[in-house]
Image (tube, rainbow, N blue to C red; front, side, top):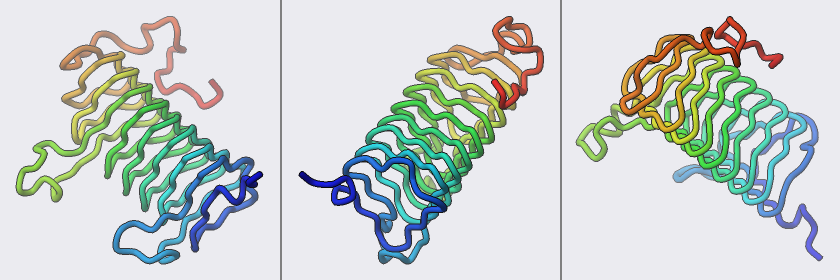
Length: 216
């Protein structure tokens, strides 16, 4: 019977700050991106990581403590990921993404290059963030701009965020919405295109402070 360790591949340059809590089968960590040799980019992962089967983490990632991934997660190179981040099954994090502490990313989510997710935000299942305003245009790669999701914002299931939109702190984006412009902090928006409906403070489900505390 094959051991767990024999089914995982840890490339040169991978450093754990304390023992991982769990490494599933067929996990790859420190995969060099195209054009880089194995070990050229250091990959750092904090203590108590739970990395489930078929997760692939490329080289050059700086990841905090208590990471959790579902099955089949892909994390590309050169991202900054904080403590207590959870990434659901089959989600994709592209390269040069910044993710704060306590962020929850559900299953089947796509986070493109140059996105920024601040502390405590919540990304619902099947949400798609985009970064190319004019795909395949001559300057498409030069003008990529991912969305910016501020502290404590909630992005509902099946939401699409267009390139460069900023979702304000504590905002709530309703399921299935297409966000084409910035969302003010503490605002509830929904629809295609998403429009402001009310304040989060008006919803009985939440405390009056739209910047929900991390103790929730």
